[in-house]
Length: 383
Ligand code: NAD
Ligand code: IPM
Ligand code: MN
Picture (cartoon, rainbow, N blue to C red):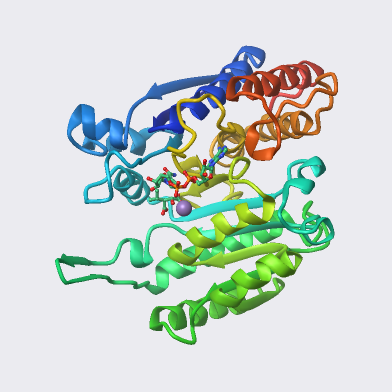
């Protein structure tokens, strides 16, 4: 059998609650596919690691992350630890940088049409939304030199040409897989690069570099530019204009991907993949798979958090790092069917963020029971 080593880091607050459901999904796949073996390495990072080990993430955990096929991450942070450095969140920033997970892929789509009424946007505006925020993940203001004094603080926001180039190339690869029609057809999807080239020097380098890379290497891909401030406005009034790939910097991408949650109506269904290489380039790469959302301390401990984003992050892990494309698709189909209420006796098994009353565990169980049927139906198809 193919054996995959996966580092599992649940984190704080709702992190462990959603991780339990994602692990259930992985265990089901392993049970149903004798050719697939997951070796899960359970570790900790974030506030819980500060409490137990005196540091947000130990060097040992970072070392394990180097050697595994992928990292499945929950979420870190909470009011009890505050924001003074080193805080829980710094564990994730170190992890991303340590393994070079430079390309953060954050798809924004309704996995089921039945979610459209929960978008705060009018249905005809929300309905066609299907874009990916591709966020640069190892540079910019997040990683520049910081100074922090009582009366002045600063973060250097800078990029090198090679940091921009590699992210631009991932954008092109994603545009080809996505396609104009969102299903891989009609030629490559549009790439919309977003920056503040009218104000920031590093944005001017960003724009120049992205333009050159697409002209030289991807002349068949349509590249557009949209300043980050107006992009965030149009994302609310006419989001379909961005159907395609939004290629952007670390800080803008952080904000725009949460805003995409606003367009969809919840963060509870939005997964992400932080890749160390170009997807589909022949070799699978390591990556960190985590929801877009945080540790949601306001609802933690109640068993009501939506586990969908973590489960869909596990699906992205199967696709991008483990080459298990069929199984990734089946997870996404199972999630969509549960959201639709189909194949589960028409029952509405949904958490409160999308209008339901179900618990986290009930949603995880429902996804597993639909997935089990799908896996049985396709028992011959082992990728
Ligand atoms: P958040 O994403 O945790 O929560 C924002 C809002 O969305 C909250 O009302 C929350 O209840 C809701 N929400 C989020 N995920 C949900 C889900 N799966 N189901 C239902 N509702 C959901 O953002 P925040 O409150 O600003 O941050 C809380 C903490 O999380 C902070 O310490 C922050 O730094 C940290 N954080 C961590 C990560 C990560 O580890 N990847 C990401 C973002 C924020
Ligand atoms: C995210 C989070 C992180 C970020 C924090 C927790 C460091 O908000 O993954 O979007 O800002 O990158
Ligand atoms: Mn964020």
